[in-house]
Image 1 (cartoon, rainbow, N blue to C red):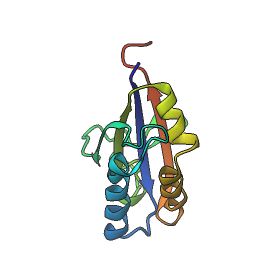
Image 2 (tube, rainbow, N blue to C red):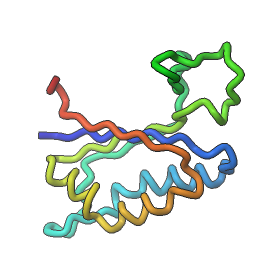
Image 3 (cartoon, helix red, strand yellow):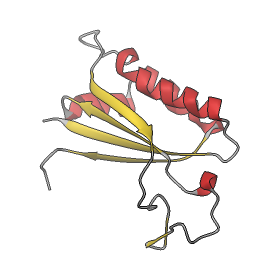
Length: 128
């Protein structure tokens, strides 16, 4: 049963483009750097990511109402700007990634200086 793991980042307004690029590159590098403890091989099935380019302007929500272009929010305060999708072969691999993988844990610990907020959503394709 494949697990799809979606991660959304909102960066601190003070984050430089270089710092944002560094976080994004390191997030994508986890695919090759995270090694399974029993197989000693990379175990992330796939990993992709990129910067938001949606014209819907639904990146920020306040009290269930969408905040669109008719507001005073600066672009840096517009919510989630970068998305990543990681696939795991099974729930055990996902759980190890979240709770035990030292490479992933080190990455998460390093985000505080540049990431303001993270949202995560996991699902099994087709399971509603």
